[in-house]
Image (cartoon, rainbow, N blue to C red; front, top):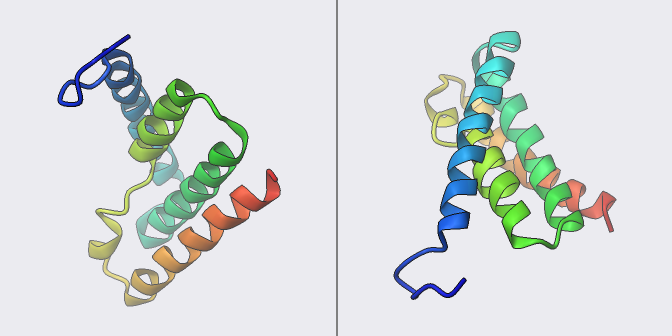
Length: 109
């Protein structure tokens, strides 16, 4: 499907939207099981690891749009970790998330 540079492919928009909604629900479910700053930490590190795995195993753009940008983008919550109230997690979350993404990519190659 040809689209102009200013108009995204509607398939991508639909897949990212659906994935984002499902990812948000999954994040909520995990945050009920693991509460507070530790829950946000676990969500972000796990999501980053899965993004690394996805990028190492899935070459299809539509699948990446649904799972990577959509589901895992909705699942991770880097916007809220900074206000979680723990200076330790403020430092550890981005560091561990980057390492987890690298590890996820590494185990798939």
